[in-house]
Image (cartoon, protein in one colour):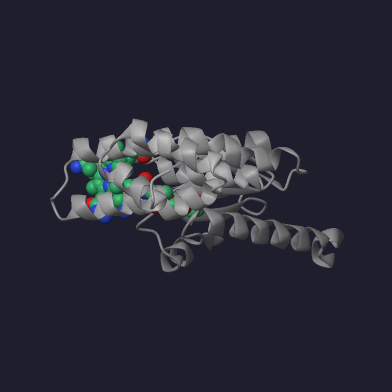
Length: 228
Ligand code: HCB
């Protein structure tokens, strides 16, 4: 392992070097580094650095794609380790997850799915560029407790509202909670569009999903609903 493994992980993302990124992930696991620590301290800061360089015009689309490839290579090593933890737990809730229509950013959404799985949630990941109707149809099909909607572009954020409207049209909104996230998304935006919660990262998404499940259980036990 390099002297500063997290800094090497960060650099492997900035360099867009998948082989180095996955080698470092394997070495980290072998030395007992927790997979989530490697992600949060090494690889995600690398993605943030890439975003900043891209915004300053110091990095271009092919570089950003190479960085995403490196991130995927690291995640391919780390994800199975994270998911293992969820296998022995009872189902904590059913989540339908995806990135909004017009948006192909998948790394953050996939990480949220992995951590939810690791914490016992049953996750149906619809992938990227998902229409509002598809979110609602899947939520109905699997009896979702929560729909998680990711958006990384200011232009696709508004489609998160479209998902909520689609759930309303399908008559599902009363029993399906909606959580939103993604780099340009904020708590204020979540309130504005009538989402049930906003999470800034994958661990917060797990905490939020647990809170939303508790709220659902409380509601189901409420005397008003029982007598209805
Ligand atoms: Co992309 N891109 N990109 N991009 N991209 C961003 C998002 C910019 C901010 C970069 C910048 O300008 N600084 C910018 C958006 C600006 C804006 O809208 N204000 C941008 C742009 C402009 C574009 C294109 C338009 C570029 C172009 O074509 N000229 C284009 C759009 C394509 C499209 O979607 N239609 C584009 C393309 C790409 C790729 C393909 C090269 C690549 C994505 C590859 C892939 O995902 N397979 C890419 C990448 C990698 C990025 C950056 C660098 C990193 C994103 C990332 O993976 N972050 C990003 C810069 C940035 O975000 N700082 C840049 C790491 C993950 C872990 O964080 O925020 O995604 P996350 O997710 C967190 C968190 O938000 C939360 O938990 C996650 C885990 O901790 N969360 C949720 C996310 N979803 C949630 C859902 C929930 O329910 C709950 C929590």
